[in-house]
Image (cartoon, rainbow, N blue to C red; front, side, top):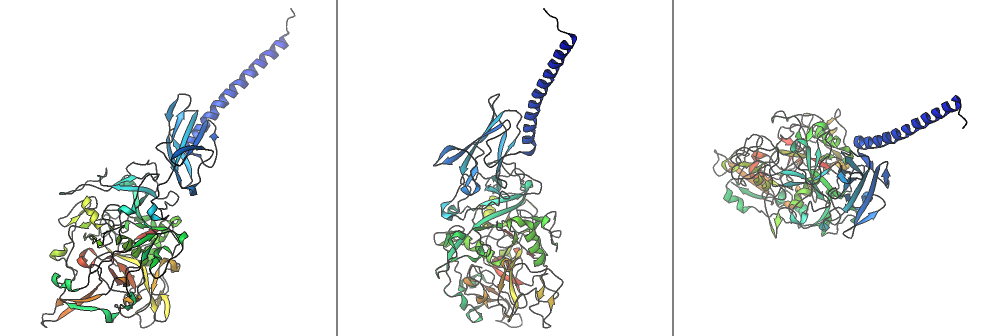
Length: 614
């Protein structure tokens, strides 16, 4: 046998070494590839969208519910198809060890699945998509979650984990917030259960699965969905309501005398619709104008009056600033007060720009109040229930009075109109804290799904303003250089015809309701259909304070509507801005349809509310 030379043997050794090195590199490379792929998944969590079937060692199978059965499909259903990932039946399997791994969530904004806690190198995920829940009675005006910015929730009559109520008495705890499964029934307007959603505090991610409790400490703001609708016109001739149609009575601070005054709460007939249905105004039904300004299928309205982050007392909640980062909309917080309308508007406007946030208009207040005054809110059969008012005189959100006041004409703390000064998470003798289930009487549905603080609490400025003059259609900034909204524009009660020029610019006209000029508070015909003003006449002028030096004579008066005798003073030259709801101390003057007037300036008794139109 011929012996190989040293050179040949060295070449063989080198070849073996090179081959070995190549094999090692290939194996290591494969391991590194697997590790990198899994590391990417664990770190970024953004795994799959569109129609990608696999990603390295990660494979996917997609199933879509068709006629109630799961059918395998080649790609993720599109957003507009009305599907959502069913996280309860979606899972990932470790193919090497044949065991279930990972947590599956869905990112609505980016329309992709997110996987967490993957610790294996060979995984297959089975993603099941179900059709989202749709209440047929809404006729398509279903809640729009704003590409995942709003988290759908249900509010349960169960005690929230973080809440402790002192002196709860005979009530029970409630108000637990649970993430809703949108493939199941999570609202039902036909049963007076309105859709709710929350926005989490900045920096908080939605790691909650359907059925999980969302902690109060994680929530920044609550919202309630008002679906688009048309309503049956119910006032015979609301344009007749002027000074000459006022009914005059005296001594109506006596509860017995109130029976002489018309009190005819209307049950309002409503049919839900979408913007695709167009605008109805056939003389019988009319699309509510609140939905036409933004051409939307509905509104997300602040569930409570707007609060201010960091305010630990009612005095610290008085800040006349523009600061969207301080907005919170929650129960048991101090209402943000003493703020000019312009600052309130731009704070609301800046809050969630991608969701078309803005300060509530007068017409949007009307949209809530009319829905509450229907079979979908506080009416059953032909009878409607009056909403209880928030009688917390510390201006804390979410409270409910224990009884309906029968007086309060003078705005004082009379026996039938007690106001409570209470601490957070505490009941008073005459009031219920939001987390006491008995507080639900102050909701627009009579349950936790409705809107709170619509009567009493703090009076609310809305974006409803009078034009500056009879022949000047410019919105009035305010009544004078001292009392104004902070918006630029003429003053409505300035003999020198002055105007504000160093303030903020007016937004587009779709963000406010403009009313005709008048020097009279009693020209109710200037109201608009749908805004909860002129349709609730005839109105009464009431004198209630005896003049001691003139027996049989009375001074001081108020105006009240025919809807639970709610406060009814319309805007005029001295007070060109509309306010709604009334104050905690106003007693019987407060209510869903209560409306008054002010200058638009910062006032310690005024707050505001935020609306989203995604």
